[in-house]
Length: 387
Image (cartoon, rainbow, N blue to C red):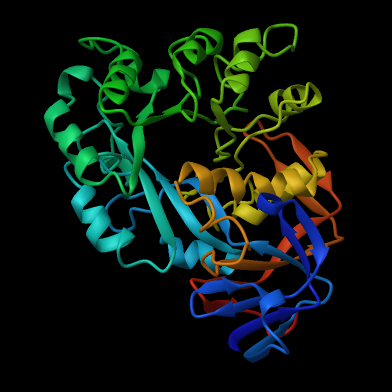
C-alpha cells in the first residue's frame, strides 16, 4: 500500500486510546491508516518528527469565526491551521437570522472543521464591536423568536450543538426585560432537546445557583473567570454544587479570552483537583495575534502545562473531550485507524514564556508548545522547513 504521508520518529500522544508512544503515523487519502496492516509502507511524503509530539488535530471548542459576518470574528483557517487547530466550535456568533449565511459562506467553505452553537439573540453577535457604532446584543426573552430558532436548530442538527447565551450584568443591567434570559434559554434548549452553552462571567445569578440548572454536556463557559460570581466560595473552596455538577457530566470550559481568566480562581480550583474539561481560547480579533494574553490554542495549552496540569490531560481537553461533544468521537480528536487525518506536530520548547490574566497578574513559565506542522483532512496545510 502506498501512503500519501508517513510521519516517523515522533512521540504519539492520543488520550482517546491512552497512547504515549514512539510510533509512526500513516495517512492515505483523508484517513489515518493502521500501519500494522501495511507491509514495508512507502509514502509520497515522509515527515521526520524526531523530537516532536504527534497529536490529533487540535480542537478549539470556544472561538468566534463568523468571519465577514461579525466585527469580532477571525478567519478560522488563517488563525487556526498554522497553530495545529483543525477543528473549531463557534460560540454563538450567529443567530437564526444569519446562521444560513454563516453556514454557507464560512462553515461549508473552510478547511477547518467547524461546528456551532446558535445564539438565542436573533442576529447573534453581529452588533457587537466595530467601534463607537457597535452595541451589546439584546437578550430580552421577549425578542426571542422561538419558532425561527426551533426551525434553524432542527434543520441543522448535524452542525448546531445547542443554544448560546451571554449572561452578564453588562447586557442586562438597567433594562426592563420580560423575564430572565437564562431561564428562558434553558427552557427552550430542553424543549428542543439540544445542548446549552452559557457565558457566565459576571453572571446575574451566583454560580452555585446557576449551575443547578445545567445538565450533562451543557457548557459552563469561562469557568475560571474572577469577575462577579466565581465558582469559589469566600474561603476559596469550590462550591459543593459546582463539584456535584462535574460529577453529573456538566462540562467546564476555561474559554480564556482577555477578560475571563483569573490565576487566583484557576489555581485554587486546580489545587482541589478541578481541572478544566475543555481548554479553549475564545478567540476574536481582539484576543488573537494582537495580544499576548490569548494568542493561540497552543499558547493557552502551555499555560496549563506550566500550572501543573499533565500533558495527557491538556491534550485530552483539546482533542478527545471536544470531539465527543462535537459528535465526532472516533473521527476527530484521535489518531486511531480510520479517523480523519487531522494531525498537529508540535515541539515542547524549553524556554521562558510569560502568561498574563485578566487582572494583569503574570506567571513565568519555562516551557511551551510550538506547532511545527499541521495536516488537515489529509492535506499538509502548514509546515516549517525545520522543526
